[in-house]
Amino acid sequence: MKILLQVPGRAVERWHAALAAELPDAEISVWPASPARPDYALVWKPPAEFFAAIHPTRAVFNLGAGVDALLAVATLPRDVPVVRLEDAGMAAQMVEYVTLAVLRAYREMDAYAEQQRNGAWRPRPQLPKSGFAIGILGLGVLGQAVASALRGLGFPVRGWTRKPKAVPQVEGFSGPGGLAAFLAGTRVLVCLLPSTRDTRGLLDRRALARLPQGAHVVNVARGEIVVDEDLLALLDSGHLAGAVLDVFRIEPLPPAHPFWHHPRIVVTPHVSAVTVVADSIAQVAAKIRRLEAGLPVSGIVDRTLGY
Ligand SMILES: NC(=O)c1ccc[n+]([C@@H]2O[C@H](COP(=O)([O-])OP(=O)(O)OC[C@H]3O[C@@H](n4cnc5c(N)ncnc54)[C@H](OP(=O)(O)O)[C@@H]3O)[C@@H](O)[C@H]2O)c1
Image 1 (cartoon, rainbow, N blue to C red):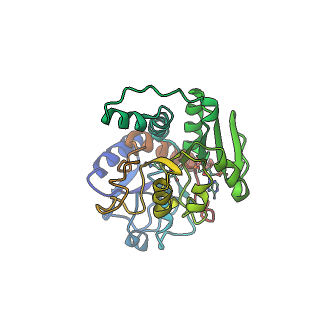
Image 2 (image 1 turned 90 degrees about the horizontal axis):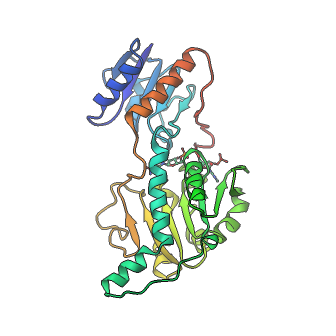
Image 3 (image 1 turned 30 degrees about the vertical axis):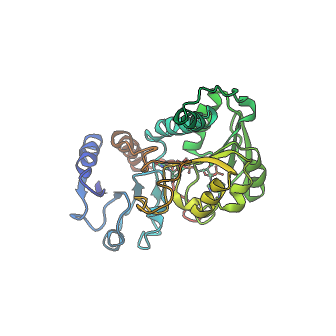
C-alpha cells in the first residue's frame, strides 16, 4: 500500500514517524518525492500543484477538521473520497477554550478588570445561570462536546444546525428559518460551524444585532463566518459586550487590524484546538485499515455541502 504525506514545515518528520509506527507495512513517501498514484494521500493545505501531479486512488485524508482550504484547491480530484479528522484530540481542547470564554463572560471578568484598574472593591450581583443561555452554532463533533461540557456546568444550551438534530438537553434550532429565534435567546454565541458557501458572512450586522443587548461572541471556527466591520460596529455601539476570537479572515491577523487593540476583544492565534499528531494518525490509520478491509468509514466530506 502506497501512502503519500504532505504536511508543511518540519513537523512532517513527526507525522512520518507516527504513520510508520501505525502502518509498518505501508510504503510511505513524503511530498514532493512522490508516486503519481498513491493509494492514499494525507494532506494539510496542499498547494495547487500537488493535485496537478498526484492522483490518489483510494482516499484523501485531510489532517484537520475543517476542509475549507482543501476543497478550495481547484485541482482536487472529484473521483476520490475526502475524509476529515473527527475530534482526534481536538474536542477536549475546544471544550477548555470555550468554557474559559463562557465563564469569563458569565463571571464578568472584564468588568472586574476595569474595577481593578480604578481601585474599586465592588462585588457585583451573581447573574442567574438560568437566564444565561449559551448558543452553539454547529452541533457537530466539536459543538456537541462543547454543549455537553457547558450543560455539565449548569448553563442552558441551545444549538443551531443545518438539519433538525436532537441532542440531549440542548434546545435545537435549525436552518435559516430557525436562526433568528436561536440568536434572540443567546447570551454567549459560540461559532463552531464549518466555513461553507452557506456560512461565510453569516454573522453580519443583521444576525449579530439579533443577539440580546450585552451578548458575547466566541469564534473558534473560521474567520470568514464573521463580518469584521459589523462585529466591531456592534461592540462599539455597546450592543455586544465582548468577543473572543481565535480565527480570522487573514491569518496571521494583520498588524493594523482593529481587532488587535480593541478593548473588548480577546485575540488568540488560532490555538483553540490544535491537531494532535498521535491521535490524528491513529484515527487515519484505523480508517485506512477499514477501507482496506472493504468496510465503511465515518468523516467522509460531502463536497456539495462543503463539510
Ligand atoms: N480554531 C480551531 O483551532 C479549530 C479546530 C478544529 C476545527 N475548527 C473548525 O470547527 C469546525 C467544526 O468542526 P466539527 O468537527 O465539529 O464539524 P462537523 O462535525 O462537520 O459539524 C459541523 C456542524 O455545523 C452544522 N452546519 C454546517 N453547515 C450549516 C449551515 N449552513 N447551517 C446550520 N448549521 C450548519 C452542521 O449541521 P448538521 O448537524 O445539520 O450537519 C454540524 O452540526 C470545522 O469545520 C473547523 O472549521 C477550528
